[in-house]
Image 1 (cartoon, rainbow, N blue to C red):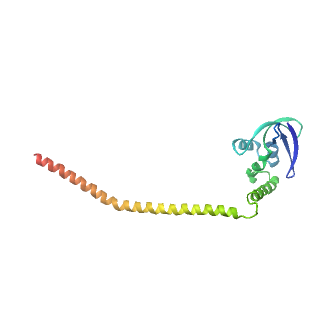
Image 2 (tube, one colour):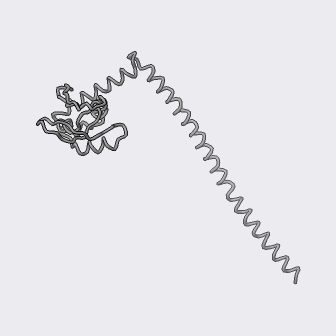
Image 3 (spheres, rainbow, N blue to C red):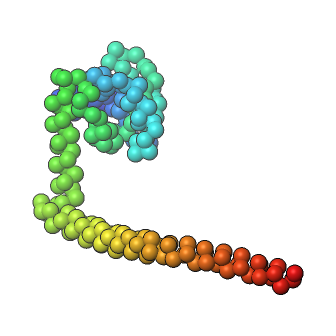
Amino acid sequence: MQTSYIQFHDNVLTVVTDQAGQQFVAVRPICDALGIQHQRQNEKLGSDPRFNRIHMATVGPDGRIREMSCIPLSQVNGWLYTINVNKVLPQAREKLLTYQRECQDVLFRHFMPNGTTSELMQLMTAFGVRQLRLEEHTEKLDSRVARLEEENAQLKPSLQLSASAAGTALYAHKHTKKLRSN
């Protein structure tokens, strides 16, 4: 294990590199800096399949070795983006919000490398067309259901009359049979 330190938005992060060369960052110091509960974040990171939380020995600021929850350095950005800015210390809120906005910009530039929204608009248009088709289909189905309910309402009285007439005819038939047998 090798410990190093990197500058991250005016903060220093302790990075632990394992034997395979993967870099990890302890979760608790970041939570402490933001003023959020590390236990809750630890649970969130452990239950969220997007993150690979592990426990490993790290050297704390006081030089003592402690078992800490860590995530890969490559996942810190994604984790910080999931934190609700309204739950952090007031003095850390603006910094986290600024960072999250930077994340949005970086993601936008990555997925829209030409700085245009044409690809996004194509996707949104395709989605809109599909949604419109679904709405049209739903309207047709609603109309069909309404027609069937209307037909049902019209047929119901005649079916009741038919059932009543059938009952009367059956009664008459049975009664006539009894009269003939007598």
